[in-house]
Image (tube, rainbow, N blue to C red):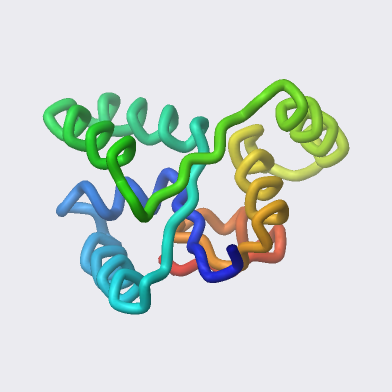
Length: 137
């Protein structure tokens, strides 16, 4: 479990969009993780958010391949949001309204804590604020 890396929306975006300022770094991290047989974890909310971001930024052509790769991947586990997890995240989100964290961020933090993950393939400083290691600084 703790050997896995969480992939956030900005991590997927950096991997998929060659023009992204962290594309090379994200690709290198992915290759290094593969050489060390490290797996990845993401959530259904991150998949949704990434697809929406790609479409909004004009990368519709990447979407079919994105979904195909995610759902057929042997190394990327998807954590799905069931009603119990949603309720726990809602409670956490409402408890931390003073933070700029999105509901999706809070879900990500919850999953990372559940799976005892420390590293996230992300540029989002909210992960660092919540005590995690941001790999795309």
